[in-house]
Length: 156
Image 1 (cartoon, rainbow, N blue to C red):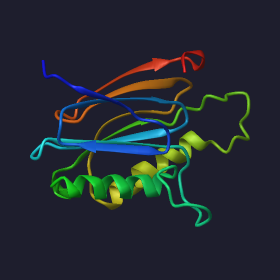
Image 2: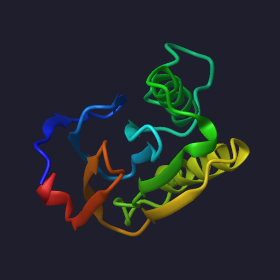
Image 3: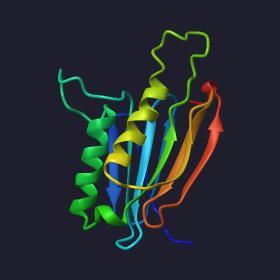
Image 4: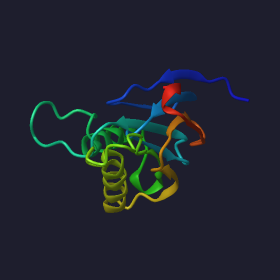
């Protein structure tokens, strides 16, 4: 087993490395996209809270469309090539079941991930999205492996 550095990924952030990292994050309605290049053996992950930046305030990785672009830039800087990338999508749970007026943020977060990856011709090789539970994600940057488990809201 490889010796892994560890990194906790907070909401509205992203992380990419050629070094063997185990990146951990917790998702509710947020979405995390894991991108991995099997040739360069480098990977990255983002964790965004809202689907699209509306042009107000800062264009931060809090928004899916920004988080995906920023992650791609980071991976390209590590020598990754778009044609080698594989994507895995996680999260987008609907945890506030009682309040349907919450604009279905999780669903919209999932939709923006799928749409942007499709536009960029990056294949989605695995996903675990939607539902009524949160997820704990472990992403390994050197192998692209993702381990995840469902968690209840009280475990956040």
